[in-house]
Length: 370
Image (cartoon, rainbow, N blue to C red; front, side, top):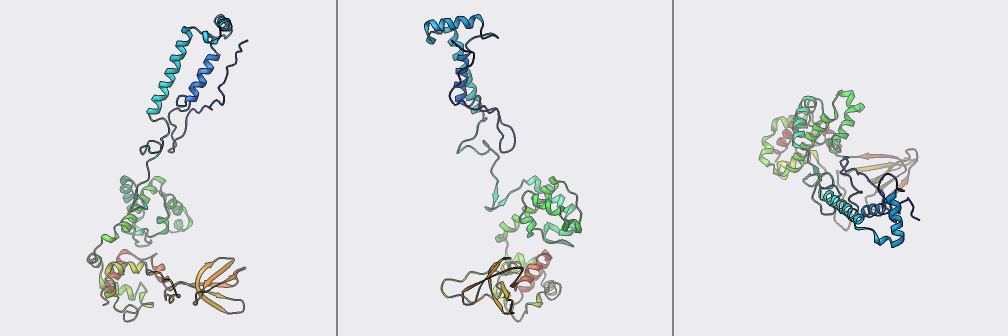
């Protein structure tokens, strides 16, 4: 006795009507036409329901049942087989057309953009490139909202620090981190800005473009151009005055002949990155760098130990001593006390207020110390 229930193909596939692309858009329907197993499943279901009309128990159904019971299922008439074969052929053509039209997933080696968003373009192997129209809008937005405090091109101005070397800019991506900082208490206390996220994205795109210029085109600068950008007299005044350089440096002492030792480009780099040097080689411990960061551990009894910090946490501290050995102390509630010393801390502190003009003037002045 034939039943009304269709015979399902073993492990019939689950129907998926559509999928989400990486960009969040729904793609063309897939699964029903692009999965060959579904074609077989539909064919088996059609064979199982091989009656017509609204009632599967109609006369044609009973006649077909008696005919097949008497002669076997292979004796179906040609009139029934032909429409079924045409239907399967049509489904197969539809699946092929959808697959060729790009509705499916891109396989390995697919052309860029066929199966997701285009790859991010990198400049210099590490800097994300932003759209030029966003950079142009960002320049206008920066000059309107940020330029008064942070100066032309983001290099520091009347009341704001350099944004090109700022941790906020360097760790930002697509303006997200920058927006969080602008809404934070520190910036709101200084200046309250109400900027929409698209405007912040554009300003971030402009600042990132300035970071790229500073990092990628550095070696294209010529020493003469660096010298022409500054005023040696103004640099001398800054050295002995607002810059505070004379507190640690003497022109006839540790800076004697520095203008002959380094070219102008290197001199300028050493102002902002003074800790530039190679590592010691293998063998006996090298002499300690006088500008190396050190740490001093003060034990409960008053004894102090100074060395190069390897690890400092709330729970322990490890120093490398002058003889190359290491020593570790457990810490609890800040005991033993640990103090960190950086001989070049002044260079770190000045980065928050150093202007382009100050740096160029100071470079021009140092170049004269030969």
